[in-house]
Image (cartoon, rainbow, N blue to C red; front, side, top):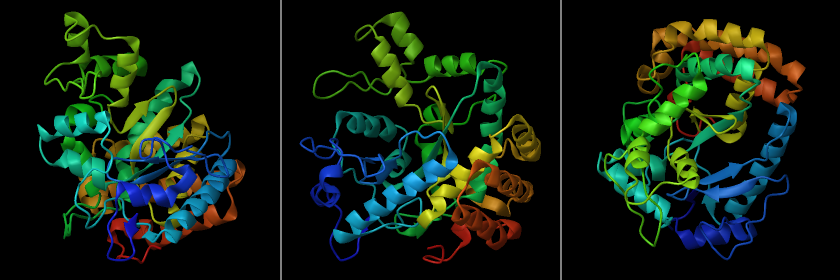
Length: 370
């Protein structure tokens, strides 16, 4: 959000705007009540407001609940004099943290060793994170492969962050560029997106990844170059625990993060109700084995274009070939999934207005997508 007047966003006025729904990370005395549909409000380091819907078994229930809670949240912020950004990177706001928690202090210190991009990613960007079932044991590998194969194409099709810190960056998804540059060991796509055993491949990545912080005391230790495997072997500065392992996983930010389910993280925030479109597309394309196989085949030529997707969007000719087929596949599945009419209409409109012309939301003029 951003102030509609000449004021500025602060921790105190954001907490006041959220009232009893304010998360304890921003106001430790808050009751942190959920919104009417059960969604929780959380706040990211730079003051980005995140709506976390409850897990729901069907697409119709999810989008109906999340849309109603989003409307309630927007009414709260509007009443306090805030407007909702329509881009996935704040066009003008500097990358300054509002949250002073030890986690974010440690994250900032770790990212600053690499460059300035970590602060921008933490404080000035927002995504649509879609959580989907990992499937039964026999289906996990296919679903893991599919969500990665879809990654570059959906990243390009939904790219929506062409400006950051007062300038056009030359990227269609500056959000993704910032995260990839923040700490590649922590954020890059997997070297092998189709491993025979995804669980083993993920376990190896977790062990080989650098430890962001060792918790304890008021200021947490931020080691340099210490992998979790090395921490286990060496036991310094103290032996790690299972809780440390769980926390370490929470500090990894790859395109897809397994958390018992699959947390898809590569889609830019979308304007208005269009946050529901990547949710619908992913749900539809993962809804049955036939759809999964078809989606993987469509995306096969573009599966390695993680670098081109955020820079060029659908101006990349290889990437531009896939999303029309994917969106048509998804649209054909949505009625069987009980999708509300407004959602199928929104998907059709985006397909006709943008995708069929090789365009993404970043190509739309400011304000045109609302």
